[in-house]
Image (tube, rainbow, N blue to C red; front, side):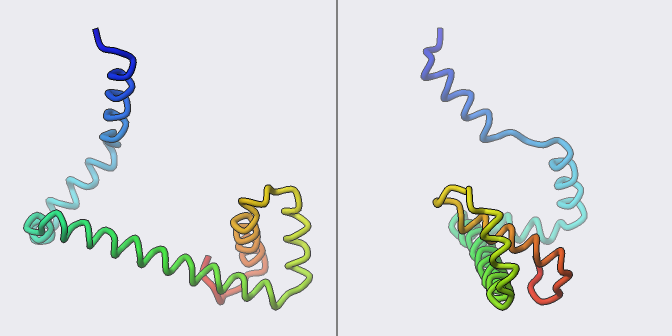
Length: 119
């Protein structure tokens, strides 16, 4: 009979390999349509694959940072918007206030129809 620790470990392992059948089927179709691309990635070493994945994550992170900076610059040019945002997030805990400020600022950008930063 498995111990509680073993059951927990087994459950965590199951959660890590959960597969969404719809996404899996879509991925299978994509692989069939692009055998050369699949072959290319299949030939890469684990280290090369990890570096490609990390490069994509780094790029997305940099884009998010740049977008957030554009939104913050937009808010800084509009003191009335900044004051309204600060009023709205006044009860947000300090540790998540910056994130809440950015999210609220993005909402304001969308409301104003600003075309500069893409959010």
